[in-house]
Length: 247
Ligand code: NAP
Image (cartoon, rainbow, N blue to C red; front, top):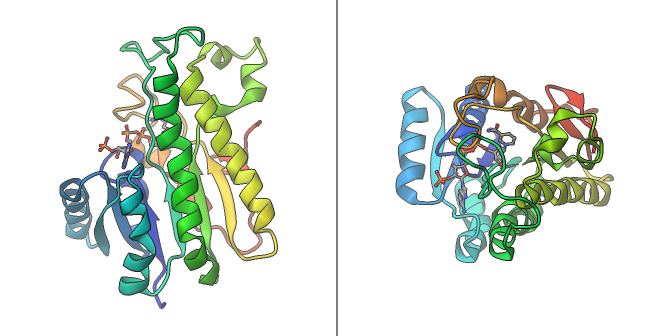
């Protein structure tokens, strides 16, 4: 492979689309994963108009057939994969005011299961499926788009304002995702692959809402930095704007 290739899941809008744009602007070929081919094509067409080498890919992260097809797609078109950004995520408990609409004692198992399906199990399945290709890359990078809301240090400290944001399903799915980053980074510590969790900040998107202070351009920076870390960069960490966050 001459050019680096990256896959960004949930890249049809929001922070994922902007991560694809910023990586593309660095000369990296970006594969725009989206729930439907139409969404992937619309987003990659937008990026191509900006001069970015973007490829559309139908990837519903909870669809096992889409996941099974991944190695064949990357092997055929690019001969490998260098960067995996696990960005697709859902929050089913946020109310219209941006805060949690359900208390931990009220949230249903259905909401918990659906949230974990996208935010955790899908990430694990996609990562395991693509790991053989990432292992062949000279600088494999896995970035898991987590959230500061997954931090147990913060949730167990009543002095921190954010600790009042107790959306159990979303928060615990990101806590589990952080555990995946740590465990996989340990397993891969003798390889060139780095695995890190990124908190984008509170970003103005459909998920973050209008009140969020950060733009998608700002929100994408942490994942882009982790996706392009040099060989001496960190692995198994949790970061926002190049600074470590509490677990
Ligand atoms: P967003 O605007 O709601 O975008 C979420 C993306 O994930 C969309 O492209 C969505 O696709 C995709 N997605 C969800 N389920 C999917 C599935 N089954 N298959 C494929 N794609 C799927 O959210 P965002 O704010 O950009 O968030 C991106 C990531 O950052 C998420 O993991 C989120 O948890 C994390 N994060 C965001 C903030 C924030 O303030 N915005 C803060 C901390 C962490 P559709 O358009 O088809 O639904």
